[in-house]
Every structure is written in structure tokens, then in C-alpha cells.
Amino acid sequence: MDVRTLAEKASIDGLSPPSYIKSFLAERAFILPRNIGDRQQIVSPTIGQAMLHEALRYLLRSMSQIASYEVICSRHQFSWALVTSYYSNYFSVLSMNRLAGSAISTANGHNYKISRTEVQSNFWVERTKVNNHKEIWQDNYNLYADFNWRDNLYDEIIIKVIRPANKDHYERKSREYINYHPDSYEELFNSRSTINEINSFWGKNYTNSPTTVDLLPFSKNKIEEMFAKLECRAVARQIIILTIFTEILKRLEPTSKNILMEYFNKFSKNVMTRPPFSSKLKPLFQDFFQDLTFKV
Image (cartoon, rainbow, N blue to C red; front, side):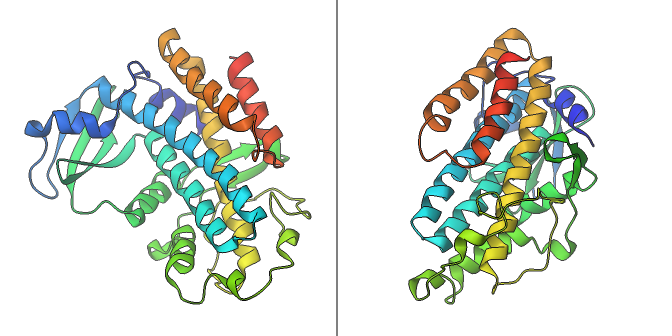
């Protein structure tokens, strides 16, 4: 799997009119599979348009979480900042899944897995039992396990998505520890004076880019390490998605292209030009937005 292949498939049905997967399913409840495990093919460009539309919206949501994360860190609410960083990763994963033609959605009280076939505007719709974070993360790792991408912005380091063993996702485990373990929220009792020394995108000592988006051993005792990993993964995923969208934009018809650019322009105006979006990442994202605006 590579950027151009993903972009070519994701752009086939365009973005006009922008729609939603849940709405598509709800309007066609009478033709959807009725039993768990049953699936059927549906030929409709509307699903492809919804996939691309939702991928774009989840990307921008992921990036807005980065801005929120930075503010929360500045207020020394570190545990909640990590949860916010998790959701930046989670929304980027939802975006990546949809770009790859896969989504899990709920309609009329039932869960459905939608996946693109090799035929244009052709999708499998399967009735599933669950719709939760664990399944979405596993779907993402399965889809991108063979995804290798050379990132020129990071001194040509290859970003790899490595499939974790036993569905033990580092990102999800980190959030669950912070949210539910009584020993989390250390800032309530202990000062984290070294928090600015994190070797990460926001830390003063940041020097290296992430080499891989992989699953490293979970360590609840190293909050600084958790910060660095979640930050790097979120940003690596966002850069991958922005690169795919740069390629998608080249393939869209004018109407769909205008819709996509309107989203990016509004986000740039309402979020990127205002505080708190003033981190080291701002120039990086600005370069991508300029590519989208002026070079396509």
C-alpha cells in the first residue's frame, strides 16, 4: 500500500455532494443485512463520497485536538492532556480507515462494517456485533500493516505502521490507564517539573522525528515516554493523511475540489491562525496547507 494507490481509490467517487455513512445506511435499512455476519454488496458512489467526506472531517478534528492538547499541557493538566492526545490519534485513525475504504457505523440500532471492493463504487456491507475503539484500532493496523512511506520532511526517514500482537494497542491502553486507573492523574499529588524536557514535538529537547509508528512496550510509570509516543504517532498519522489528501486533490473534479478546499480554508482561518495553534507543528502544517492551496 502506498500514498498514490490510496489517493486514487479514495478519490474515485469524488466529494460532491458531501454525505455521511450513517445517513446512507439509515435511508436504506430495508436492504441491509439482517443477521450478524451476513453481508452483501451495494453499488453506490454515495458511500465513496461519504468515506472521503468523513475522512476529511476526522482529519481536521484530529488536528484541532492537537491545539487543545497544547493548551491543556500549558495548564499542567497532564493526564487529561494525554487523553486529548489519544483522541488526536483516534480521529486520525478513523480518517485513515475511511481513506482505505473501511468504516464501522451504526444505523437504526445496528452496527455495520463497510469495506471497499476492487470495483468502482462497490462496497461490502456486513452486519457486525460490536462497534468500539478496539475494533477500529485493529482495523487500522490490519489495513496499514504493509504501509511504508518515505517522509522527505523528516530527513527521508521511513514511517512504518507495525501490526501489534494480540490486539494490545499502545494508544488504547494508554488512554484506559489514564481514564480508569486510580493511580493516574499524578499531577494532583506530584509536581512534574521535568515535563518540558520530553523528547517530543513540543519538548525543548526535540531533535529527531519518529522512525516508526509502532507498538512499544506499555509502561505506566514513564509519563514522559507516553507523551512522546502519543505525540509522535498523532503527528505522523496526520502528515500521512495530509500527504494522501494532497494527491487526492489532484484527481478530483472542480466541484469536489472546491468542497475540499473550503473545509481546509475554514480550518486554517478559524484554528491555525489563532492561539493556541502556535507550536513547532504550525509551520509544518502551514506548508501542507500551502501545497493544497497554491500548488495543485
